[in-house]
Structures are given as C-alpha cells and as structure tokens.
Figure (spheres, rainbow, N blue to C red):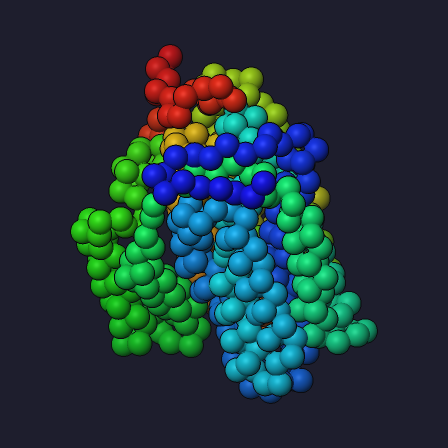
Length: 496
C-alpha cells in the first residue's frame, strides 16, 4: 500500500512497520545522506587535478561554493515539499536530482559545466540532509529518537574520513571524474533499499500550496549572502563596493522574505512553527554550535601543518580527535536523553565542556603537542556531539506531525548556514592576521607561520560562539518527550 491521502487533510492509516523495515528505511536514508556528505569532503584533494584537466583553475573555489549555495538554500524548501507530497516521492526526487548533477559533473568538458553540475548536485543534496532527519522523525517517537542521532554523526564521520582518502586515491591513480561516477551505483542502491519500505511510511496529508515567491526570496537571500561571505577577504576587500552591495542586496531580500511570511496565506515557513520558543532557540543554538564546530574543523589541518610539522596529506588524520569525539558525544547523549526528565542539561553540560576545551586550546595555541591537541579537539567534539541529539529531538518534539518537515528543514538550514558563516568569519580573522590561506578549500600554508596569534583568535572566536550557544540553550523551554501513545505537543517542564 502506497502513501494515501485524503483531500480533507486527514492522516491515512498505513500498514504497520516492523522493526526490521524501520531499520531498512533508516539505513537507506542514511546511505542517501552519505552521498551528499561525501560530496562535501571528497572534492578537496581532487581540485588541483580538476584544475589542470579543465583549465580556469582560478574558478576552482566555485566547485565547492556552487554546491554549498544550492544545498543550504534548499533545505527548508524540501521540508515543506515533503509535508505536502509525502516523504517517498520527495526523497526520490532529491536522489534523482543529485544523481543528475553527478552525471553532469562526471562528463564535464570544462570548468563552467563542472560548476553547473555541482550546483545541480546541491539542489538534491540539500534535500537529502533534511529528509534523512525527517524520515527518522516519522518512524521513531521523540523519546527514542535521540539514539539515532549517533547514526547520523557516524555517517558524517565516515564521509569526513573516507572522502579525502577516496578523492586522493582517484586523483593519483585513476581519474578525477570517479568522485562523481561513484555516486551513481550508491544512489541506485539507496533507491532499491528504500523503495518498498517507504510505501508503508505513514503520512499526514493536508491541502497545501508551495509559496513560490517565498521560495525564490529565500534561495536568493541565502545565495547572495554566501556569495558575499565567500568573496569577502579573498577576491574583494570586506568594505569594497562589491561586498557591501551583495550584503545590502541579501539584507533587502531577507526583509522581503520576512514580509512575505507575514502576508502569504500559506507561507513557506509556518509562523506557528517559528513562534514556538523551542524551535526558535533550538535552531539558533545549533546555528552557533555548528559555526564553531565546522569552522574549527577547517583550521585544525592548517594548525597542525604550521606547528606540528605534518604534511598536507597527513594533516587530515588530525581530524580523528574531533570526529571521534563528536560521534561518541552523540552516542552518549542519545542513550542518556530517554533516562533524564531534564534532558536539556545534557546539552548545557556538553556546551560547557566544549567551551572549556576551546579556551585551553586558545591559551596553548602554538605550544601544544600533537597528543594534547588530539585530546583537546576530542573534548570539543564530544561536547558539541552531546548537543546535536538534544536540539534535534527538542525541535521535532515541539511540533505536531504536520509541521515536522518544516521544523526539521529550518533546523537543517540554520545548521548549514551556521557552518558557512563560521568558516567565513574565521577566514576573515585568519586573513586579517596574516595567516596564509589559499581559499575556502585550498588551505595551503604556502608561507611559513611563525606566530600563533591568528590561531589564538580563531580558537577564541569558536569559544565565544559556544558561550553564546550556552545562553541560547538556557532560554530554550524543555518539554516532555512524546512516546508512541502520547499526544501531539506536550506542555513545558517546570524547571525544578
């Protein structure tokens, strides 16, 4: 039986899913998310090879930026679409779009076509990130959902480690286009795995309309903002007319988008969802945590090349500490949340622990051994990992099933935007303090680094972001987590 829906907006009963079928669906959507995650990590070591093969190497940063622009901007749109048309057709469409972009990229005869293919990939990849969490939210009640956050963190860890290794191997021994060809069999496998089980996924169908104007404003505002952040400090000065013009244009589009949310009969992002303090503070906390986490992960390889003497190829191994810490933190948090009434304290403890490790790292910048660095970055990852299940479960628990896709899409969007803003902000700090970086992805320390001051500022900025997230988490209300037989939206917990 496929997803059925009544025009009056009532939920349609579907055959009950067994635990095996639930696990098969979750494995399939995680595999689809792995596709999108790999394409954020596998490209970096191959970029010089692609530049030599296709020419116009000065446009290489756009190979990453093109993907980032479309993937980040599309996340909340997919949440809305899946609420209207159902999870199965939406995730199938996202996979097909992603595979189409992979095919365009693999066959690209020039740099312009490659950048276009990457942008198309992002159109699908942005949906895969959001839809994975939405589908898990459909299958598992909030009280049990936290433990699956470890699976998501583990998927990101696999992509972070396997991506650079695969990319380097393909570039050195085979052909650069294999980083895109490999997506085809993986994508087909994901479709085969989830095809039949997803037909049994229960659906809450309502008569909806897509707010096309709101979608265009959101995509345009996000794209222009990320473009300004990508160009600022590298191609143009931050106070140049080009960057200021882009920032002003983005601000205008954001203002128009906010106005559209108030006036549209059915806005792209429900004001009812945004008005919920759990959604508002939970998504903002994730924005800040991700800004620190992603920004730090970008500059750890640069730091170890500068002060630990590691080569560019081996510096990626220094990421093991933060990656393993993130996964273990998410596992610990996910297993602990169902046992605690005041589960928000888990996130608060994680943020404090991460803040302390970042503060020590800033104090010891330029004077740490590799072992101490790994211990501290493991601590940072463990602390941030503890926050992810709490924020995701809290936001999804705060809304009814009809708004699950929209709320998860907003959370995914702000997490992605936080990562992009974190990298851009730390890049401005690095460039402003003379740290020789070759761009957003090509972080080559082409000139010797003798002062640790830029890294002190970078680590301090990450600690400041974590401190702000602590305040925001504190403001987030805490509600009892629903189980299989509980009502839609629970009341707030008294902060006893």
